[in-house]
Length: 557
Image (tube, rainbow, N blue to C red; front, side, top):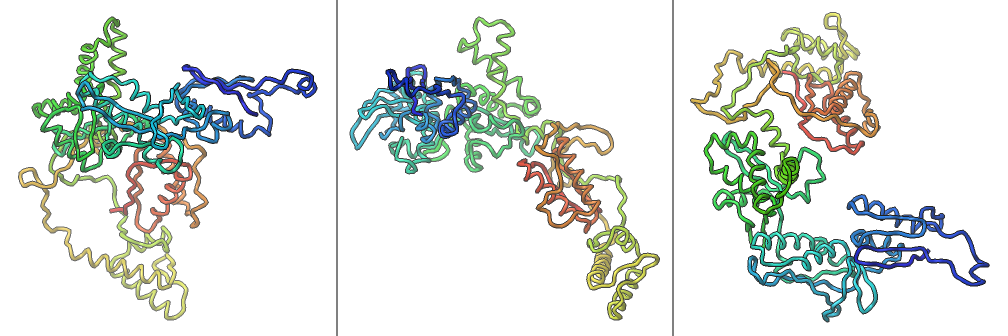
């Protein structure tokens, strides 16, 4: 089926061709085509319509598909790939080159974003209506990234100050990124940039987070882009910052020394531009870095009030909340200021649990009593392992001698008390290793003097946190998780799990489903903690789940 194509500035219309008039058309008359119920032979068109619907959901664009007509926006037409666009009878991508440049200097009245069309070195002046170019070779289509860049270049007017110019330049360069990364992969919709723009790397920051320093009275600022992190529901890590480690340190140094700027030059051709709407938040953070230690501590605990006040003042100065009642003002201020502060996973952990910074000292806990065993391989059953671990040094040596003699005499087992132990080289080596470990422990007497670090003497600094050792002081913020299918020991685990390992696996899955941030898998060595955890991680991988948190396996003691 070949659809009829038409367009206006408001959108694009695709219609089913009308039936032919005349006698022949009436003789060949059949049931009219219905775009909502396509036959199997129209599979290509059906797939294109499915792509169109998916893009409409992804971009939040309105579209309408009736029996005889399709209506969609220019943005949706620009977002379609070549195959889907061809099936819908949309024009092909343009064969011209878009040459971009910048005129003037940032902040001057002559500043301008340029975008000109060329073919075979000759400048062209096609009329553009949304995603459609009216060229000397007929209608042609442009991709979405090019449409966004052209909308920005054609709609921007200089004279609004260097902050507005910097922001426009950053957005223009970001729009062109797909054309740069895709250069050479498709002859259509090509991009040509001047040396300035091609060597220009501009990041736009409109979100900021607080990163507490080693002391509890200072912080650094971490910039983010909503363009990158808005799809992340929670637990945004600092690693998703707009800047790499070296560039981030340079930005933080310049923020402290020069305050909040409209743009930060990080290296030749590399800039971080601050979105004008988010500038009040950065100004507050820069000012608080110069405040007293007490004020900084209070700000780190709850930065939102100061940021909200600054955003309200900026909205008032621009007249954007004039005439609103109290409820309207509050809603507008919250909508503008809310996203500016990114509560990263690192910051949430700090603000929720950290009480300060001090010299580390080992906590004195008497919560669990060990069994006395230090290392016994899985070749022993749990009962045998406990028996062997509880033997005195002399009886352990006797057991090693008995196993050695049994091996020489081709005996399959020996008795130790009322417990039968297999006699083979593996069990003999395990018992000898236990003897060697006990000898090593005797080299460090338990009554040897130990020096605890103190603030007066000095020592490693560590965060002081609320704990639940003696009393309940801290409630972690957790959100239950839902798996696509019930967890089960994955088929990829070839080694069968023993009963206690299966119980541990089930417990890990329950903890994950409850929303806990981490799992402590602690048991005596040789009982298969690693296998349990591999099974858990393998299962969550099969469910396409990103597992975050600390996975710690440790022996008792």
